[in-house]
Length: 518
Ligand code: NGO
Image (cartoon, rainbow, N blue to C red):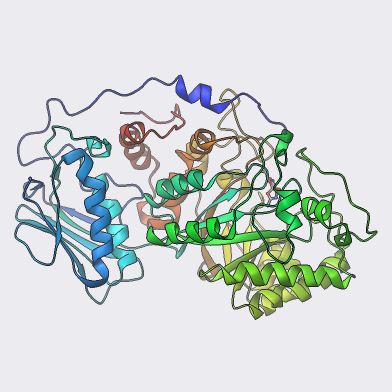
């Protein structure tokens, strides 16, 4: 692997800023934004251009019961820039009404915008939240400002019916190679949930560091989370159990499910530095801050290995309300094949025993225990066909490295990122079909897509944002929008229109030359 080591922040700060748009504005009754200017693309839209709805100082948002919290989030998003009170009430005229009603698919919603009012309806709050993300993109970019602006706050008229193609739309953040503070993780949750990403996979342990407190093995974080435990000796840190629980709650408020990962039986050097009994010879290895992979392994034939795995899985499951628990399994190059199979035969059932669905990188599909425990396989290869994934018969999350790895460089000129899976520009991230990537995995076994962001080259939130955006939006659209909506020219034009929103939010993003930015 090769890295470009130039700081991303400096580059992003040097980008020109946008000037406010819409000075002239569209004619009254019309809007600058079309009903279909939404990322990810909506499933069905019927514009009614003369039926726009204008927000006024008197606009109210109506909701009751389980819809109230989502209504509150919409009001909170729109208050700063509009300067309007936007009270959430049970009833009201000319309102933006959030309604729970039967009959919509999971996370699906319908939206009707008329001059006299707006109705957003879904069966569950998750659907309302998805609809709110759509609504937020239908007001001009000034709505992202943090203080009151003069603008015509007009929503384009018409009807939308929308629902996801896949149930699982994920982003992964590696906390092991570089620890990212809870505030940075919360910011990332804010950013990804805007695009209807609904899972956040946290890679919590690796050769360099261990980032989640485990009470029964306290040296994991005391040693593995100490200062200097990041790549290049930079950084350090870990999540306390309270930090983790608070992140899980924060994510859940944005309808994002946290998927914790402890990587085993490889990628365990940090654990072995803290507990030498986790090696086969009982000798502590040296701490590692380089980027090599494949050299560490738990010992499949020592009982202490399974006490360790059981304790870690139990404590992690106890603080994780979501259904999934990821046990890694990738690049166990120094675990003999038989030992790998013996390890998975004992560890995958432990995840089940603690009430969770095991998830693993696609190497776990070599183990019959993967299918027996109905594990989810996360494909991260480059090749079109992966017979071992097909053989397992399990559900698959697609993270093809040459399409979805957000830590890959954009091109040869843009600093930042690794290059082992190739350069990934926005169109590379967008132009593939999750339903057809693995020809021997039937479409119905595809649970969804996930874009991993490994942290070897990352330091701070600016670095995270610069590599994630805009590529993560391409993956979000592949995960949410129907295949029939797939259209590079449309995507790239909607993306160009989104740029000013990121500028206002203070998000550093790659101004890809493939996109005409507003
Ligand atoms: C690989 C490897 C990780 C690296 C990453 C860098 C997987 C599943 N294992 O992906 O340890 O950090 O590449 O791109």
